Length: 178
Length: 144
Image (tube, rainbow over all chains, first blue to last red; front, top):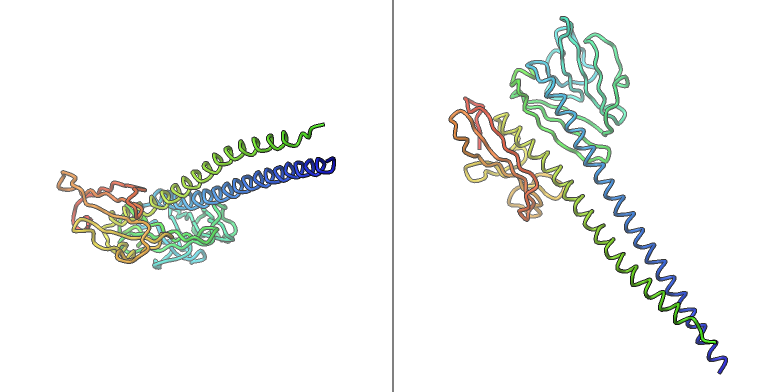
């Protein structure tokens, strides 16, 4: 009789223990699900933010510098003369926005170097390296191209490798990129 | 002496029940936040595509629409179909997740063209809408 009671008592304790384990596992599962959900959410938001910010930054810079003949695309180290960057190629890894200050041409170069969009403002004859530019935003690559109709296309590959295409019709028209 | 095990079991069962209810609510919130985040990401992307289409309309060139495999949407605009990764696909292909349509609208003025760019999911859920307008002179006209 006493042995039967002891066994019952042991089974009861074991059941309580099993329930505690089930409870602990459930808590862990919910916590892990929550953490995973939050991680995916922040990652998605970060990617969206990065894509949107890069597109808006480039769009704003081009709009600000949208003056006929002052928006150009070329390679960073293209020979910049006092008369401009010469023959306009159809595409390049650097966007040039020209400004004339006191009769001297200055360029804002926007390009990608060491995984960052960079911006560099200098006079036409300044000898500067791509590393000298100000870091703006993390991306993998940037590519600019233009059509004689005044259409500028920017290909942005963000840090995650997702490519985004941004299209801008220059308000200054066909002369903008000639 | 009576065992206290049944009481402990009852306590544990009540605890599990309360926890199950809370967990169900939490999971519901997780799923909802994930859906909202996905929708926001799609809206972001949709707005970018709508802006691109609006800029293409403003430039007066149909090259962009040709590059994006756009089909003519009746006689009033273009239709671009995208797959789930926002890659343009032909409008008659399978696996279309999003569509962009441009529709010419009546500005009521002779020298002004207006159009509406709309991006929707395959289910017809609207993600982004943009109104575009431009001067209707010479080549800078709406080529819908």
